[in-house]
Image 1 (tube, one colour):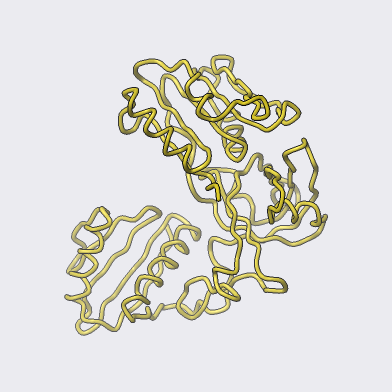
Image 2 (tube, helix red, strand yellow):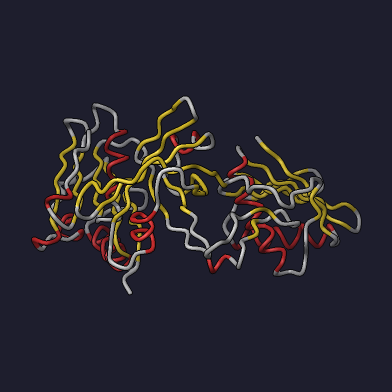
Length: 334
């Protein structure tokens, strides 16, 4: 567990009351903590305690990644209230806790629609476990990598709006003598910034990632259904490869062309069907073709935003209850 402490120049009693309202509005758990409260957060917790005319705050998380996420969110919310936390440690100019630097080892065009990027570095070990995703940082031309500012939050050169931060899924991560070698697949499309980047980046080039973040593996269940479009293919591949040998279920992955089909290890009890977009198959038609049972089931669907919304309604109409499915929007059509 890691911690960070700060003081807010605001009356403690009022601050505790305000944070309690925030927690209730955000549906976050609140429990007493001394004269103050502790709010449970997605990646840790926040303790708010009165200190006379001031307020003491403590954030905690399991690692530096979670701590940085909490600090970034907290500093942004406090700024909207005209408050700046006075942290006990000097954080200005440091590498954010959720950022990792690496070097490109190679980029390979593995099929008409996908490139595979391999990177190496001594800060990549944490990406081998859950969560499954990370963000690739692409900033304005000539900009340095982000560092933390005096507030402890990430300071984005040129402003965060100038940074492209697409989400990718770790396909494989294995230890090496130099640290960790990590690979991820990029779905190529005309005009895509990362597609262009794949065509010009070369071995030895430095890159930066943040994470890991996002979702993890689905919880164990009697029958698992997976449906992903071109952008969801990497996470479906990661999940399939990690399933226990006795898993049961069905997966359907949509790719543009038959040449984009990959060999993905998966248990014998899980069927894998490749759906070809150029032949008229879609994520929704793939979902409709899943042979799901009436109970002890879970379906994960990842595709374009409007398709994810359609899938959510489709599943509800067929009796899927809360906790039996998840639909994720991986991109949005213009």
